[in-house]
Image (cartoon, rainbow, N blue to C red):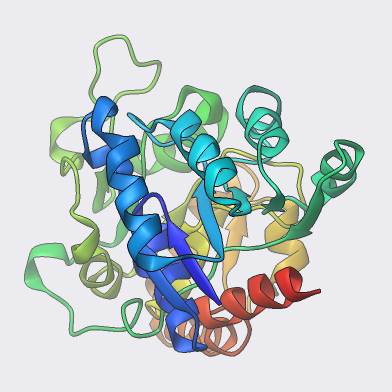
Length: 315
């Protein structure tokens, strides 16, 4: 089997693509968004004619991505298109439905949406995120990142309520907290970080180092309804052997065991209580972090996800 990826975000470049290689699938990645819009057809055509893929793989909604070119070339060469709806369920109506309608095979991170895709006449299956143990692993801590609590992610207005109950109490208590990501100091943002708690944009290759150096990694999520959809952050943090204190979602309760693999907070009071408890109980914090890593390596690696993908395609 040969799969040609048309984009290279971390969830592909560090995730599904190397996972497929690990189980013997040939892959090639052509990040179309990095090329001028008008050149993307030529770039993809050359890749298709040299690689001869069995499938073209698309995901999400990348910027500067000429999706129509992908569909056109797929039709011209008779190649099925796979669409991985990694922004489900939040952007199902605005993005995923349209992309699914133009694709041959659909994979979603939200199990609740499988009936919706099948109503569209699509072959659809569940495909969760995973960690890559060769990259998401425990590293020696770095003095530069020795914070009590860290969060790596963007300041989305859609998750304002969770952002406030997970971060505001820590700021009021002057916790050792550092945050990286987009839009945390925009003047029109409904939630803004003090400059002392904002680290700018973190290069993805530094993620394991940051997670390995912090005592607690925080989790925020855009969806609070699905029993399978979480941010890919959950798999990255656990893969790095870090202690994860996340916003509560049904998916975390469904996929993991509280106090065994990770822990969560449902409100401000619980966030303060849980963070203070684990900062002063290092042995328990480290035990949970280790157990979480062992569990994620056993059940949720990118090789597991690659196998899920291949088995679904073959069936």
